[in-house]
Image (tube, rainbow, N blue to C red; front, top):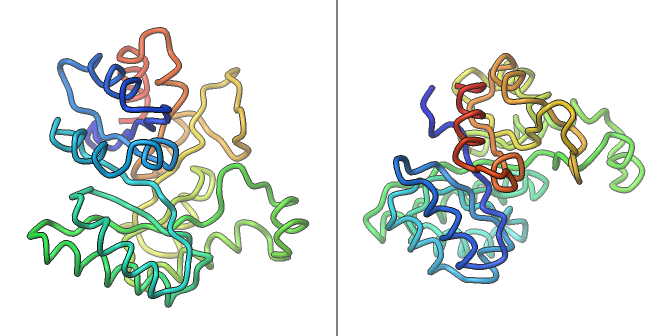
Length: 236
């Protein structure tokens, strides 16, 4: 594995906070995730600026709409030159296929490599009880995640977002080359905030996930660079 298999979640409110955080990293360019808060607050230019600084980017917007809308949106997002982006697997296989088509079209038009496209299975803030009670999905959560992962693979996507707890099962069902990108990373004794299904970086390594997405354990640390190196040491 490489250090870029650790993705830092840039969950900051604005450009100033984000760039001040990235300025701390003087010797490396970590792989970073840009999510809804930052993207909706600053727009596409924040992606372009961070990309110009040399960072690989996971654009985490979790598109979920009718297939044509998602296809057109992905066509635009592809022009930003991100390295990875995602949709919700719950949008159906047809929507995921349309997303991939749009991503490829946009990348070709811009003369850029096509980003990796992955699908969110179930959010790490979702427990089995809440999934069944509130979403009326009566199957066990692991069965649901595996089914969504298989749909994503059939649609041509290269992987899924799941918790580290499900990564090995996804690999068994979809093959070792099928990527697992796993948030919900916490150290023992640390608060889990709104996460439910969590593991430590070392446990995620043992399980065999490909990428871990780490936010507050790094971004809220007194020394974020040291925290990042600790996570890399435990996972890589």
